[in-house]
Image (cartoon, rainbow over all chains, first blue to last red; front, side):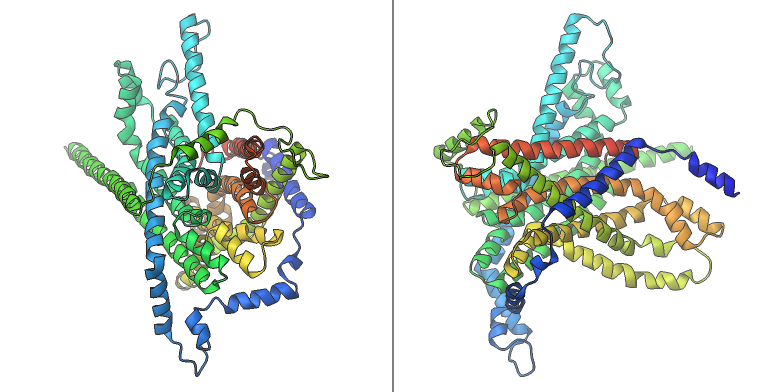
Length: 312
Length: 300
């Protein structure tokens, strides 16, 4: 019994690539920690701890602080907190909330429009002389076919490169460049979010197109349908998966839209930035919590929508 | 006869499904239009003027000629050559991302296991009913912690650290590690719960303990997906580490902002291409590994 276990262990499939990768990752982790300046003392120190104490003390709403906190004998109660929060919401909070949501929705819709158009030329089974038929190009083809093959491959690779670049640059960085040049309105923020997410949705869409069962598309192509006709015909069968991806990206758009405000666009982030600049830590904390609530609401809505799509 | 009824029911279901999908797509389009209307009512969708388009044009016109050396006449004394500076900033980005991930993954594994309900629902010999009652006491708090951690964006964590104790390199690591642990943990626990349980049920049926069934039959089913998702999150961590440079750490984001503020567009593109190369390399490496594991890329 023991020997057979040993034998099984000896003969188990092993991958040299995976083993080398594991060692490389371990070395990278060790080297990063050793070479970096990551001491715990950076979080402590007398001055920092004093600052931390002040910070945590000032997280409580200002009226509560004034009335002596929640200790016995204080006049502060939940009514005080509610009035304070309601005043903040009326004073720009709800407007910023609406703007954040609108930026996230508009950006993800634009990203889906662009990404799900770009995914067709980015799919290797579409961007080829004989679309939807697998297999390498036949050797010794006529020159015209070789040329067509080359042209499709060039288109495919350039679309893929653009999508890769769009998603390699983080949305915050795109937003910084666009906001600084186009002005502090929602438009550059929307464009930045849309650009990054179009890169992601385009790649995921291309994978979906490449992985679809080829029978229906081949039948259509063999019957003489053009590329776009075939694509339009098989699109509904890909829709559930594309919708799932859309909702996943919408969730992250909500997260990102809150922080893009820190660049000066109206969203929760701009209120957070202003509160930080004015050392109003109670307001800072309130808006961070509001943003967290919004992210949770977005996740919930997205989960419901994904459930609907899955069951449909 | 019955097969004909079946197929008719199937067609009917498909038609209803298509209707639902169409409704979802319609709702998305309506939400998009409503958002555009709201933003333009707030005066936030005004088209940019010619001047700002010129500025953007100047920026993009440098895309094909990134700088290999400083372009500004004012180079600080003792500044390293530009390419060395770029390499250092790139390494700092990797360093921050690796440090953050190496904290986030172990914590996420703990939280993810605690947050998975599959562990408590495995059938087994006597006493499991009690365990099934106890389950929520463990996985509910774990899920709350993960939710709290991930619902605050890493840049907001960075801002909170900045206000509380200053954004040192250690604080930057934590700012990324906290939300990433939450996200990774949530996805890990979902993957464990969604893994096929046939083998685990078989094992417990033939007398294996719950721990044996979990570690030998359930976990190996989820592991490839978990590894693939971890690689993907590392790519995200690289991007987050780069952006965190806007708030202090000397990663790529810091130098991109400095170059923009001084209108050094050629140098800016050098940093952008460094970031692009970093993401492309990690994307290729993780794809090679993923194909070993899965043969397909994960949904998230």
